[in-house]
Figure 1: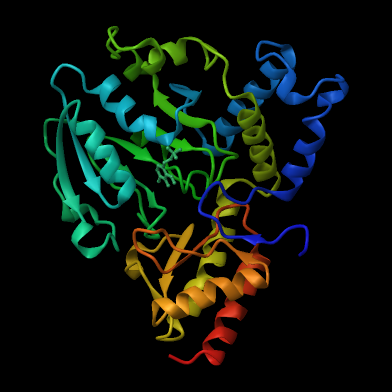
Figure 2: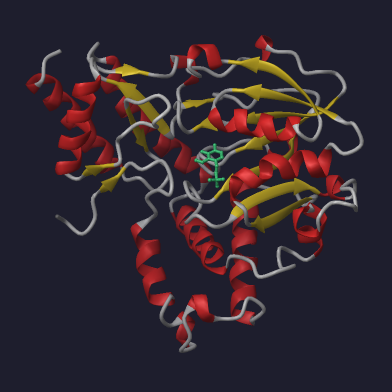
Length: 361
Ligand SMILES: Cc1ncc(COP(=O)(O)O)c(C=O)c1O
């Protein structure tokens, strides 16, 4: 077994090799201090420099306007499902949600427990194989925001363009943040669990417009209030120092690669290789409708469940790991986030051709 295989895991997912190499050194002795990175105080000047650099790189790479706060929180992306309505919909306010998969469904459930939620669209009866275009739903006029999941990790669907609305947008970008350029100023809040495009599990990024922080009710638990974390620059309590450090290293790597626009080109080309392989034959069937295809997660089926099992096992044996689809839809899924190398996609495409030839339907 080689030291590293191609890891198609949906998250936690492949990270840049250079970042892991650097981290393995810094964990033992950070910047010649004789102390490992995960052993230093979060209030030390060394760690303050780490978190400040991570934030400033993120602002630069995403072109985040000055009137937004960047927060590094805990509790996973899933905690945002209730923190958003708890902080932004108190006192009988309303919001509109688009239901395009497991993660939006879960956020709708949490929000419904706390506020008046209008679900304007659902692709559930089509096993979430698509996301809507703007003319397929109506945002409730009394809504504070329109909530959507920009990339549906399980089903391999993604909005080709961010939805347009006169209401502010709120989006779960856990599985496609920093994979493509977009205009942050259309959003009230963006959040992402780190464990796909940003770093390891354990930190959740929240980008929130400052004026919203002033509207947060004062009677919610301290740790669940955006105001608490915004007022203390994510240092109200001990932040997840190691994940934040890795996020910073991943952002440096991304900047070195040419930034988000360059990464988007690479991502589109990589995904194109896989979709071309799927479209070239009836043997492989993409789960997502073409217009809704994700450039991060490619979900597909083979003619039978038995062939899928064999495909996943034989792929793993040649160093193509993590291709099993999510248990809710089965099949196969190749997650090809920013750090996933192009060579791995090329190897998968070659394997798909060989497998089809050796295993006729
Ligand atoms: C789009 C999306 N949102 C939310 C989550 C949940 O994230 P967490 O496990 O950090 O709560 C995931 C996990 O895969 C995801 O893909």
